Image 1 (tube, rainbow, N blue to C red):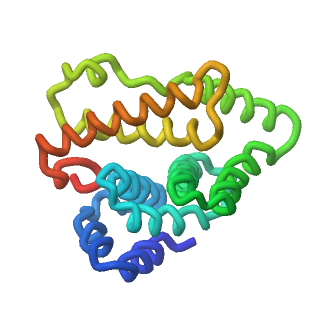
Image 2: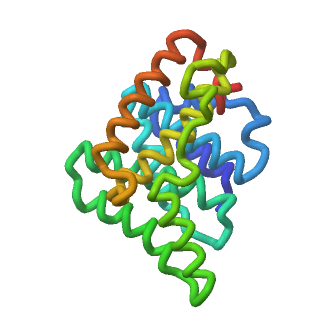
Length: 204
């Protein structure tokens, strides 16, 4: 897939989305992976700001990209699929939600033997919360670099929403993940109130 085409197609969807995409500096769009990361982060920032329509447009587009055995790319696509599922839940669109979950789970079930086993073991540890928590300096507010704190919380939000839409786990219940999402959203909005959105990734 030509990633510059994705940028062009998304820019033609709405004037607000075009403006946001044009605000992303070229240095953050140099490679296919960087395009996916920047657009995925943009979609989640739109979600944080309750701009669900534009968030959905981006997540729909990125969700259409298939898995090609490259997790450098798939990580960001998978986060966008998770956001697609979350937005579907808000709209009570069971068909789109189930389709999104199937897209994620089908990759987990792909491959054979040891590769598939390792992939699922990593996934199960993730669903239990391994590698999901925030750094203490960010969680406590000690990190005074607002842009870095926001970006770390943004990736944290991506992970939390992925866990939520996939149903949580015995170690990380839906109730807990929903509380963590709300707490994190509150903190992220607070950070945006203290700093211009232009200073956070992918706009910086």
